[in-house]
Image (cartoon, rainbow, N blue to C red; front, side):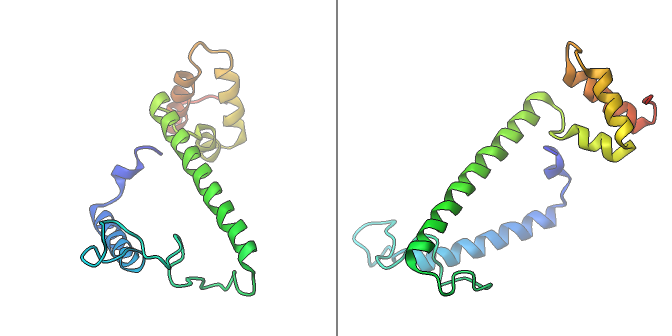
Length: 148
């Protein structure tokens, strides 16, 4: 999965970059003071709450909720977002370190079913280098040469 970024066509990345540019430009205009009118650079507007962009709530999830409830849920969202970023970072580091797809067993399971997964576990259990064994097994399954 770590090499999938290179497989995405260039027009997608250009479009994504343009979208990010548009969103960030809008965010700066909403949240930040004009640098020519402010006493210093990079000052947020006094009446702006980070993350609050014009009451954007298309599903009406915050309708009728008091500020305390909203504050608790905003904090939960921040904490869960931070945890997700740490988890994704750990997954990327693991893939870069081992050279294996993070969920190798899922690929084997999708390719040939539960029998192939059990065969991979049996063949690689206790091997000196389980990662190399699993990688070789995955290649054998893809080539149709694995026995299970």
